[in-house]
Amino acid sequence: MGKVKYKRIEDLPGVGPATAKKLRELGFSTVESIAMASVKELAQAGIGEKRAEEIINAARSAIALTFVKAEELLKMQQSVERLTTGSKALDNLLGGGLETQTITEFYGEFGSGKSQICMQLCVNVQLPKERGGLEGGALYIDTEHTFRTERVIQMAKHVGLDPKEVVQNIIYAEAFTSDHQMFLLDHADEVIKENNVRLIIIDSLTAHFRSEYVGRESLAERQQKLSRHLHKLIRLARAFNAVAVVTNQVMAKPDVFYGNAVAPVGGHILAHTSHTRIYLRKGKGNIRIARLVSSPYLPEGEAVFKITGNGIEDVSEGEVKRR
Image 1 (cartoon, rainbow, N blue to C red):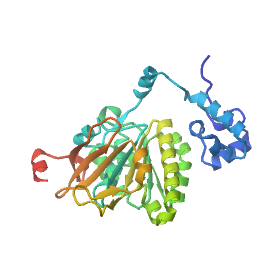
Image 2 (cartoon, helix red, strand yellow):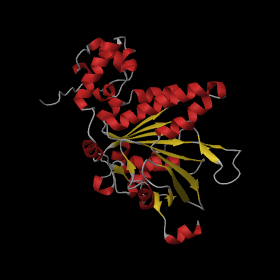
Image 3 (tube, rainbow, N blue to C red):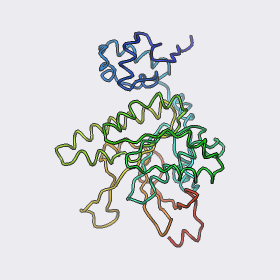
Image 4 (cartoon, helix red, strand yellow):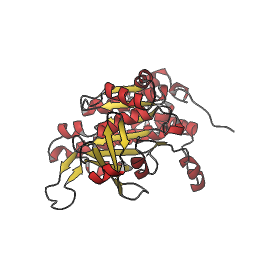
């Protein structure tokens, strides 16, 4: 007997128009988002935990979220795709590019190239798969007003894409507070589905959280909210086989006298949720150095690339020596 397919949340057993409306208000607009939800999250729609569990199970049966053998897991992992950064050196450092279904974090000081990489990825995701793209759109949540359409147009022209089409395929939202930022992501699943979004970017993830939750007494609440926000992001990335990218600020480590004296904001919550962490720093001129700090299976290492008018590019051997 084949899997039952539910196209809309109203099609799920036990979900009438009134319940569907409440679920949408909570940010659950697609069957995929309900399949990834917890019973407590759905129960907020006033439907009771038992009914919430039945609805979640029905949604999960539709997209086959069940126990599998490792052999089947291997097949599922083969659906993971990779997105090029525009630099072969950086792609090689990442094992062939940014993976779908995972979170990649870029962190570094101001001017290290975090937003430039994000804008380049918004262009590259629209490339054909044989050129390292995913043939999809991008969702860009901007918290520091760093997105520049004119920059995206420059990058699009360089890779031979129609700039008008490229900007049409980028869904942009500016987040004004941490709660607004969370609200945007919580209600993003329908936008992602309708626009074939294969790349979800939050630039920067921590800026609002850092400025709004100051002092040790608010640290626990900040980390709890950040954790919920990141778990929503990873659910979306897995449900839609998308690349998830977050940028992060750094803070000084005054107790460190040797080695790297900066660390990413977000503490253990972010460290444990980001699958791949890359530290960016400036070299001479337009040169940037990317260090792979953590990955589930890739070794630590460094790659050198440059940021030009064309976007993210590889450097020549001579430029590497001069860095």
